[in-house]
Image 1: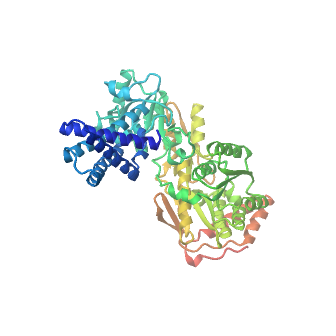
Image 2: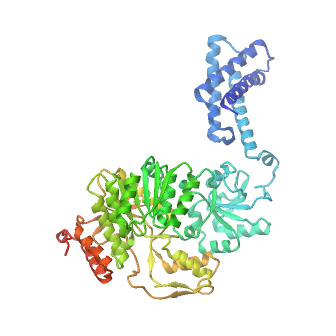
Image 3: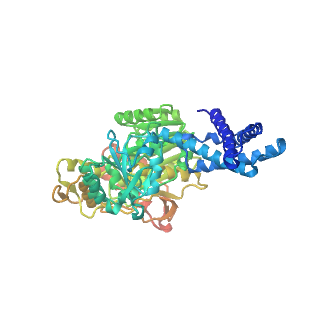
Length: 611
């Protein structure tokens, strides 16, 4: 029904309300004056409708707030009627009693109309009237058990039906004992999370085994533990959660619910951030992502596209990876202006041409070979007039013991040196391991478990920081957004709050348990010994840096002394040594650079000159 039809309906109900109020309150027969007064009451309702536009609230989604607005509309209608009658037709049979009765009847009719409309929309009118027990058990739909508080569950059950995969809710398990027995829109709270096993046993004894379990919050999921979750997965129960803000905004047909990945089951509760600063960062801007087909780069593309960028350029050296992320973005955002570019960041001339053609406003340098091609990207971004360059770094750049870590530490300095000093702002974002990335131990452990073991581990005391890919990218975007609006250039390296480090052996045990198996009995864990350059633990802040809070979930590692400048000749020398394949010399010169960059005191800060 359109707005005009709704207004007409409201006016008609007001007309009927005055007639009913007159009859019920003072029990008088209808006269010509009665019809006139009812007409004037309808006119008053029409004026209130035009002033407050009550009809704009969809009837099928009526809530408690809407009912209060309807009551306000009825009271204002009565007041407007009294003003009109005083001016045009003084006096009314029954006086204020008739008007008060009409207002109450009008409010009741308006609310009743919406309740019936919403019940019809959700196909629950007959079910609500005729059902005697809790939660209809529709045999054609898989049964769903909801884990969460009563308020969270009620909000979920109130959501419009049909937004995602359909299930028949059979009950709620709450973290609070006192909520047991409550009924939420026809679905009962069956018990507390502490009594989950007994609740599940009762459901199975009644022939109502759930096909899926929905976790409304990460805290509810974390209380279950890997062993219990693994047992449920082994029994064929789907573990579900709702999509996040970015995922829901990705496409109109995104399902309401999705299956929880093993990476999410392994991680700690993620940091929750307001998505608005990220939208403000990329909205209406041209964005370029290097390494767009990789683990981090592809998720950057997803979240940037969902945040409303004006144009997205996806750069990658792998044609296969580039094809897949381009197809995904095209399906989710068919009207987004985009371009996929096959390009190796080590090719300086090619990088220059791409940047000059695409003219990005913001560049996210996430290529896996970023520590090799960073200078090329920084120079090209500055030359094309980009406003911001964000380099994705790693905890391996702190006190590096491997060539990769040392190259990444030099890349941090190179990005600032070759990209800064002008109108382009440079941000370095440093974080640890991400679960599910191409270099993560999780895919390796999964394949080893699938083969029946053993899981191989270099050392029992090895520990690392972990977070999921979507969470890491969300924090990266937030960190860059903070840097973009800062009044001064970034003083240090932005680091992500990774929580407490996780022992890899504990991660292995949890992965085994999540498959419903027992570590040591079903799957063995073998210690193979540390590899050259491997550290027992990683840190995000070096000896010449001090950490300070930048924002929730984001820290800043600020240098204790100004960063030294790397002479161009020194980098050219490294290139020459690499060209002739002198690995030993490359390693030696690279670590010399790193040691100079890691100087602690001001007295030792010197310009890094060519030797």
